[in-house]
Image (tube, rainbow, N blue to C red; front, top):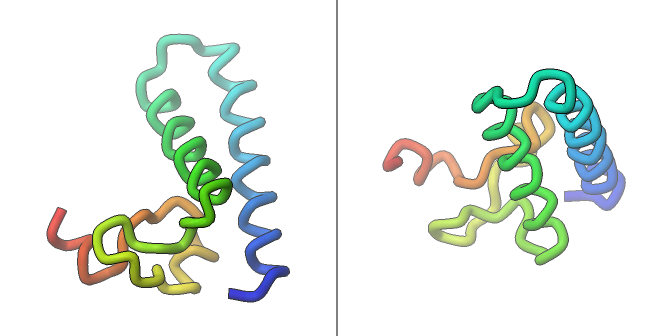
Length: 83
């Protein structure tokens, strides 16, 4: 994936995190929002580790268009159905 796309996705995740934190501050105890924040944090952790965009099962790349549509996927399509 191109550097500009990686930067875009990282920025999108950072923005989601900020928005979620604001909403959670006003609606504490919402388990769905807390779970979504954990997913965003996990994606940011994968960025930091250099594993963002790689399937957690086979370490192959996640399809670029899937990540651009939703920056949270952790699995390639082959391993998504096995979950």
